[in-house]
Length: 247
Image (cartoon, rainbow, N blue to C red; front, side, top):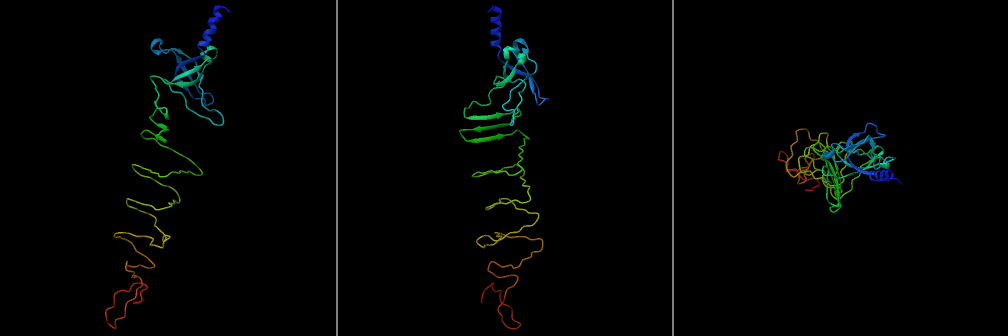
């Protein structure tokens, strides 16, 4: 083997895997997204050796497809067959001083996005966190059903919560700490113990007509139909007799 051939073989082996940084991205063709990379120290040799457009690898590209294009300035590894950068493929990313690791914990797994959004899972605390920046929106669409099973649940909103459905069912007791308003009427039935449908501790104000099959006072006197003791002609009637009383 001549010296030239030996040098060429060493060059090919040395350049088979290189480290560079992304300088441009072209995703206009979904069947062949690509990027351009530069190899070398930009502080020493300006941009460094620049590649032509080359593909970048993805996690999945079949029946299940994943998508996350590289970003400008991202440090990447490039596989170069025969040491030829023009035939290269970006095979992965590496942390750098410009883009360091977003965590130094071994038990934390996360995605950190450029706009400040973050999805993380803490193995020690068994906690999944989704944090979005100001104005962030989470949109979910499930044509059939959404099921959430837990011990306790809390939904906190700074302004309002809207439940938009033809029918909303609440199984179990419902406690409302603030004022309760309804705009399309209300109806109900007595509970399993036969108690009252509605019980209020305090006064009530009605601005319309009240219609009822029967009204009773706390002492059991019907306001609709109650008897009195006969006390003679022209005598004042007795006090109302409670419903069901024989006296």
